[in-house]
Image 1 (cartoon, rainbow, N blue to C red):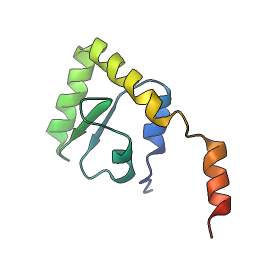
Image 2: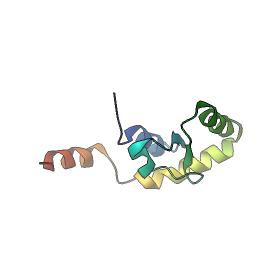
Image 3: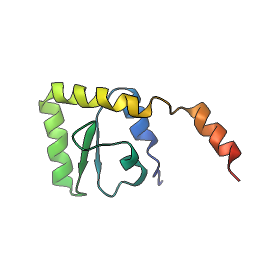
Length: 89
C-alpha cells in the first residue's frame, strides 16, 4: 500500500503526538516541520531510531511537539475529504 497523503500523520497530530518521518516521505512533509511538531530525518534507520529514542527519553519534548502539530490538521476531517473526492473530476 502506498499512502502518500499522510493520513497517519493527520491522525497522530489530532491525537497530539509528534511525528518522525523521512525527507522522502511525500505528502507527510506538508504537515511535519522539523523540530517544531516532529522530526524529518534522512531515510536511514539509525537516524529514525535516534529521533524515536530522543522522544522516548525526552517526554516533555514529545508532548510539546505533539501539541504543536494539532493546529496544523485542525481543519482536516473525513467529511471534508469525502466532499473533496466527490467534487473531483
